[in-house]
Amino acid sequence: METKLLNVKGQEVGKYEMPEFIFARKADPYFLYEAAKYYLANRRRGTSSTKTRGEVSGGGRKPWKQKGTGRARAGTIRSPLWRKGGVVFGPRPRSYRQGMPGEKLRQALIDALSAMHASGSVMVIDSLSLGQPKTKELQSIFSALNPGGAKALFVIDKADKNLAAASRNLAHVKWCLASNLNAYQVLSAGRLVFTAAALNGLCAKLKEG
Image 1 (cartoon, helix red, strand yellow):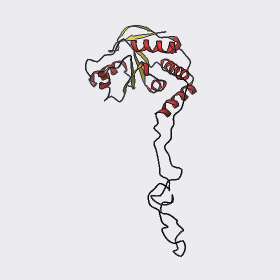
Image 2: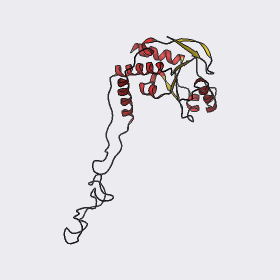
Image 3: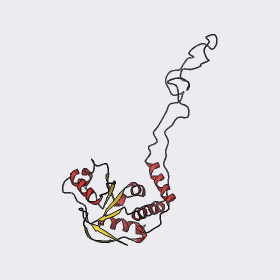
Image 4: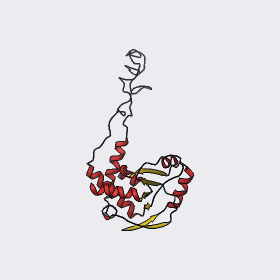
């Protein structure tokens, strides 16, 4: 499986051999759904909280006597029926964390990469380096590599301060280290742009796994 090796101007400079064990699998949609749900659930903080009638302030005495007023019986002003009263069955702090074996996470990443490659959304460039942390320079690279205008995820082999700074003002451009890439990032990217070094490192990591 060969694909074009491009430079940052979108010009072909050679060929890159795509490993079949990563990019030629038939992805299981339900398995990818499970993986995406795992990553999204583990991102949730679970800090939403409401107060019950025992936690809101006030309500220490009966607002009026039981009989003779013509009004409905009431024992506290902090009843859930009252304004500023307690909340019934409201959200409480909890953990949404899910577990998934490492081998399934590895397989999910492979399936996600295969699905993206099948849709023609994977590109390989020879290198990516910015002389200065300029948003305009990164935007020009994005436009040359991604004429359709969809969002893109640049996958690199080592951290680049200039790339990190230049991408801050571009909502449609993200970057990630190949060693940290996961299935959800792949699936949520409009287009994957790998540097050759990053893809080599990722292939070696997945082969060892």
